[in-house]
Image (cartoon, helix red, strand yellow):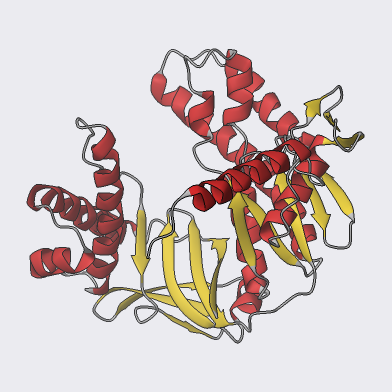
Length: 378
């Protein structure tokens, strides 16, 4: 199985690459404009339409990267336009460029990036980047104003672990329950506190100039994102280090639950919409696949409200506890959800309740009687 990761570092070649940034941005925006007009739906159709037109004095491989970026933006644009007919055609503002592995070269700890014919820009790679790229296959590189991102891949043997772990993601914690009946809770309240702190700080800004206010908001937003992502990296690393199969909820459409007008408070909607549930999922998934561990997804409906033992409806109590009237047992809501996720992923579905079983047997009995009462065909 082929798996892919990325490693990045800062660089100081933004001024040297500025002409290439401008050229790449022009090619991408031109491809988006013409692709939207002529309904080009793939990178190959954009290539046939625009390659000869966009190829200029710069390195020709940049046209391929720009067309790939334009194709992805057009795909997203068509998806948005199905829901919103007056959606605007996307436009690239930021400095960036993308280059496939045939276009650059890494040698003696340095990376060489072509600009024009026999004109290159070189930069030194950090030691941790070189260690990550060792014994791997290089992929494409993405360069922004101050970052260099290198993708790399390798072949991994898929493991068949004997143990699996069900993971329930919440706003303030991550709860795990494995096949050995062990539960573990990772606290994420610090991430929520960081978000609330930065939200409070940004609410105090009083700037009349929208350009300055936007730059300051972006600065603090990046700081908040980096601090939260570091906490999520620590938690995801601990989860994957147990070397067990991963079972996660397939969470979809959760942002629609906390839209304005749903009868919820502004603060509550703000907290729930700041929940980084997908970022944690992304980190767990790529780290698990890099080690060859399987990752499964199950439906999220009813994992917290149904008993993991008998499958009956549970009654909520104080302090995030749930009570099962059939089993006469109280259990933590998150632990119960992790148990249900594990059971669904391992196809160990709990038995139905007594009332449901009686209903099923009654329906079966009626079917048999109806078949017996019918005359036999000869």
